[in-house]
Image (cartoon, rainbow, N blue to C red; front, top):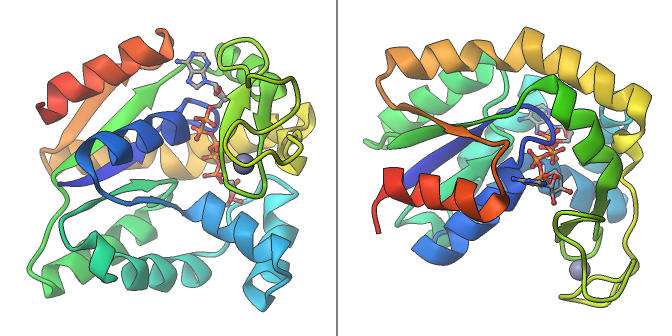
Amino acid sequence: MKIIMLGAPGAGKGTQAKKIAAKYQIPHISTGDIFRANIKNGTELGKKAKTYMDQGLLVPDELTCDLVVDRIQQPDAANGYVLDGFPRTIPQAECLTEALNKLGSKVDYAIDVDVPDSNIVNRMSGRRACLKCGATYHVVHAAPKVEGVCDTCGEKLVLRDDDQPETVQKRLNVYHEQTQPLIDYYTKEGILKSVDGTKDLEEVFADIVAILGE
Ligand code: AP5
Ligand code: ZN
């Protein structure tokens, strides 16, 4: 099963993508996580990506598309994958469609996690991230067992640099301008499914499972 997660920053794409990956035994491929890992390791890609991410801007398509096209051809992705944070622009969607055509493959579902902007800022200010293993928490809705500590790996949790309120507003503007048009793109492809992302995270997941099948 090949799945794309769509939705505003903070809509819960990453939270749901991790649950999908675990249930259907497919890799969770997050471009945001890939960039953050590169920043942490001080790679050239990380240095380039950081200048855009810290401003709430998208990393240029040419740094993003090849990376994903390469990743989805790795052996662990042979039975499918869930893409989280990609594609994010029409050129990225076209790049993916073209690459999949060449591979004789296609995306099965594009799931839009729909949350109004008014809820987003609150979610992001309460988010705490583990920069070591990529786990995500929320101080109220998904709290770790010990405050400020990752359940999975014990690392100290942090507020992401791009989760400062001014940057969140910028990311929302970028989302509406550059990413929202993908909803039309995948509606035309006939694979768009929308879920109400304002519900409790287990309810959102149940709605997604109802779409994907048990
Ligand atoms: P990325 O890491 O992809 O960030 P994003 O899309 O802005 O999404 P987020 O990770 O902020 O949110 P999410 O929807 O995954 O929400 P989450 O599940 O964490 O990208 C970061 C940056 O990298 C971009 O700005 C860009 O610069 C760059 N980048 C990445 N991909 C790129 C690409 N393809 N092209 C160009 N640039 C790219 O949930 C948020 C919070 O809410 C959490 O605390 C969570 O616990 C909580 N929560 C989740 N669901 C619920 C619920 N149902 N109820 C209550 N709380 C909930
Ligand atoms: Zn961790």
